[in-house]
Length: 114
Image 1 (cartoon, rainbow, N blue to C red):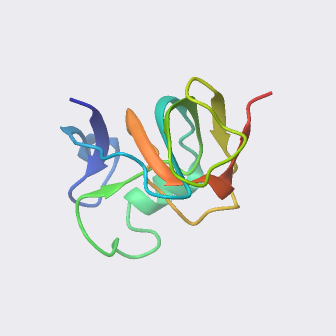
Image 2: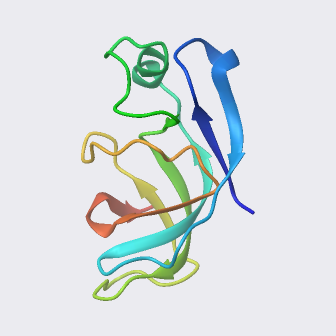
């Protein structure tokens, strides 16, 4: 079962937990990919510590940038195939939560890895 890094309360790195999660097939306009690497930057550290106020709900996830391999392609997606290498583009999405082994998200925030 895929794991996801989450925090259930505010604090330092000690509040991070690896929880099991499930993922569905991608919806139309989405990719499902296996996350191979994430970046944790100052914004995520600040968010986890409560610097932006508490998250909308707990548990909350980190990760605004990642790289991985496409597992499934949602309906209407063109230019991506299973096995393609992809990376998110920080600043082009307000979505956090890439600190996971698998992730589905709108295709518009992806580009090919160099």
